[in-house]
Amino acid sequence: MKDFKKYFTIPAPPEDVYLALTNPNTIHLWSGEEAEMSTEPGSEFSLWEGSIAGKNLEFETNKKIVQQWYFGDQIEPSIVTIKLHEDKAGTSVELRHTNIPDQDYNDIVEGWINAYFGSIEEFYTE
View 1 (cartoon, helix red, strand yellow):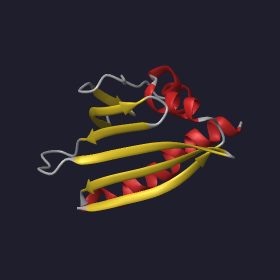
View 2 (cartoon, rainbow, N blue to C red):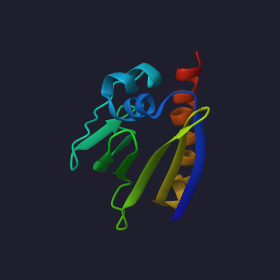
View 3 (tube, rainbow, N blue to C red):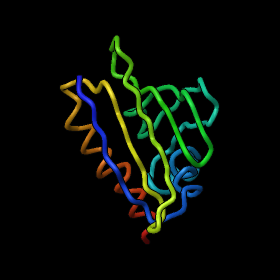
């Protein structure tokens, strides 16, 4: 199991970035895919036609999102914590993803950098 931590800067205010991460319609705009998402703790979510799925654990509006991502029958939960901080360039995003299975690590890291936050950054830059 591996952990991943990275900071991203998104050229939009925290309120917009929070919507991009939690609102299914906004997720669809930047990802091009249908999304199942709710800000209700305990609700399940699904992105990219189910290639990412899990449970929403905690929300602090415009500031923090905590999710459990599912990886098969993994015993230790894989936890994603996203913190949003106002920044002079828009929003500083602090991402921490724990307990990523070794065989999935490279794909997950590439996905976070390019498909996930890369797409959100591109969406707000256009």
